[in-house]
Amino acid sequence: MKILLVHNFYGSSAPSGENTAYLAERELLKGHGHEILEFTRHSDEIRERGLSGTLRGAFSTPWNPFCVRDIRRIIERERPDVMHAHNTFPILSPAVFRAARGLGTATVLTLHNYRIFCAAGIPMRNSIPCIECIEKDSVAPAMKYGCYRNSRLATIPMAAMISLHKRLGTWKRDVDAFIALTEFQKNKMAAGGLPEERIYIKPHFYPDPPAPIPWEDREPKIIFVGRLGWEKGVHVLVNAWRRWGRSAPALEIIGDGPQRAELEKMVDKADLNRKIHFCGQIPFSQTQEKMARARLLVLPSLWFEGFPMVIREAFALSVPVAGSRIGSLPGIIAEKKTGRLFSPGDPADLLQVVKGLWEKPQNLDEMAKAARDEFDKKYTPNKNYEQLVSIYHKAITAKKTAIPLIAIILQHNFPMI
Image (tube, rainbow, N blue to C red):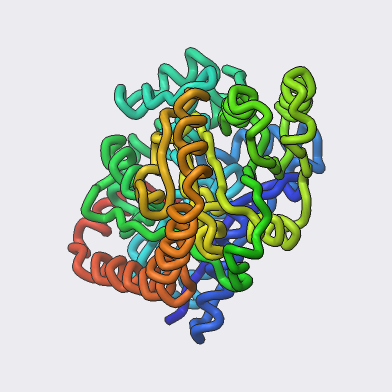
């Protein structure tokens, strides 16, 4: 199969799960002998140009005719079976799907976030989940609140992108298959207007995990891995440890972000420096080593996560997970099997759940084994490859069964550029 992969890499100054997922899938497909073509852009291209770059990104976000032209030339020359886009923001724009119109190449989009309907990308406003734009089928709330970077001006290109491609019918006419990361995300995107019958669920995978460490050789510690921002709920975790007191186990917090200084002050004020250790942003390999030696991962998220890669890593390393009962997490963490759930934003409930797990190490050990079983069933490269290729074939079938006359009419009414 010949596959054209399309992706806008986010800036190199910050880690990106979407970049990681794109590269992992690219290598997965290459490893199975598929012919891979790539069309990529990097956000660094505009960041390095200062104001002129910012303006270029703003104008490119809704519609970039130059990328449409370039991708169409590739499709006409190479005739790939599938064009699979991961991220089109901010340079490529969703207009890239118009490039394949009438050419027989099936189109696929991975929904790494909610950006095609939500200006902020992740449905959250003022530190609480918000799906107002999806429910009202309008970008008016986004403009009212300045949801992108807390700025009405910065939100304009995002709102223009969402409105334009709804009006043009891009998602209904030009994309043959969508890949959602979880059932929760699929339901929300269908509610936003995507054709539900074309949304398929495929989570992330872990290409080459290290072997799990035997339970008896692990350290008596709990771990958090992620960005230290308000939406991740780490302050709730710290408050739970404050309530737990001197009998609390060691807690390692791996990651960095805007809330780190505030969190460190909270820990210092509560005299928890001997219990809670901030590791900062460390290399992936070191993170895996620390996680493998932990007995529990805690994710106290306050927002709608996509599919936290740290969960598939924990499962691969045979580490159970305690997470917030919000968004996609209840669909990933099997209650009382691979972990437990607690009420988001509630330190008392978090404490009750995590303390209950910690005081029954035998149950925790059994959950650890179940977590690894879950990984083997759902998150290995082979399982993921089977799912991905199946989606490609469904997209190709959908493309072939489309009525050619419709494509001709649409091409006439909605010219490519």
